[in-house]
Image 1 (cartoon, helix red, strand yellow):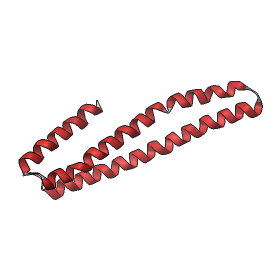
Image 2 (cartoon, rainbow, N blue to C red):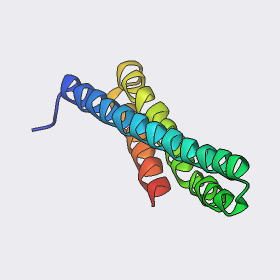
Image 3 (cartoon, rainbow, N blue to C red):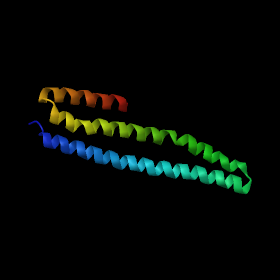
Image 4 (tube, rainbow, N blue to C red):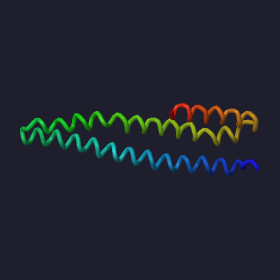
Length: 111
């Protein structure tokens, strides 16, 4: 038995909620990583031991990955947010085709 439109929309809403939680987790951890880098720079300036600036260089380099993940999650959220509109406005055959294309795009970009 095929899932109803309401079931499909509920699943999309659940995924969006989960993505939002993951996105906020990444944001909080990115801010913590950035704060650690700033603290190391301040330590280096205050103590005059510039070796303390080395960890800030590392933390700055580590910021690339979480920021990339946040960007990907937001892009996927936008794509998933359009799904209900596709389901509601297009005829069933076209909506199914567009949703398949959307899911294929999301899956291929996730690799």
